Image (cartoon, rainbow, N blue to C red; front, side, top):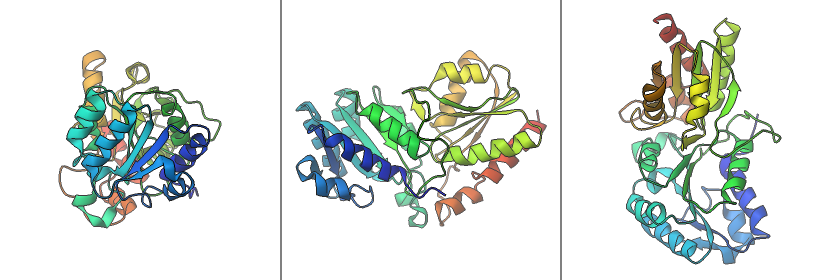
Length: 311
């Protein structure tokens, strides 16, 4: 069982790069511990800025540093980064095309029992609505490392959402990775699952179970929610009778909505969107919440069976 979180991978990748690149700067809002960035702050104190609990300042200062030639990674809980500092993300980062990567830690329902105030179930919709803002939800440690190395090379705004806990490995260190291109994990002619972030491992297990039962199921890891890899999506959906999206997000404005919009415009298909409900979540761990709302492997497989039999 993997014990390395995606947030730890982000820190490790930035620490390795910062050894050779003094322009890399990490900015936090009293979240270095939660973001697993304490080691970075200790090793590179001259490349680390602590803003305290002030998310608006976090984003504006990050944009200011970027305007001075720095490569900035601004980390804060996704629930606060996507709401309290939304105007600053819109104007200072996206509109200004600043070289800032916003890292939303403990995304979705990672904070579990802390409840609605600490859940970030609208962040994909919010950031995807901003022109010139890219949105990424890597699924495991290997994909997170590949994504971060690519983002270190470019100079465009991005939002990266990661979970608080470690996720099951989907890939290996030798995985193929291309920025803004979805990963085809399984090919299938009848049913297509499209998942992102922490939902990918569960969707993968569900797809394998369904294939053992005789369903011809494919799976796309759509870690790049924006820009959506329309070419790969449309090719994978060419023959299928049912497309199922799986996301740790509100049913509005996220992966399901963007996928439905793309398919309806180019290749209409029946679509089932599996997401968190439009309401306040129950208390519990993230795994308990996933199971309650049918977003674990068992629940995903059950929903796919029921939907496919209704065709």
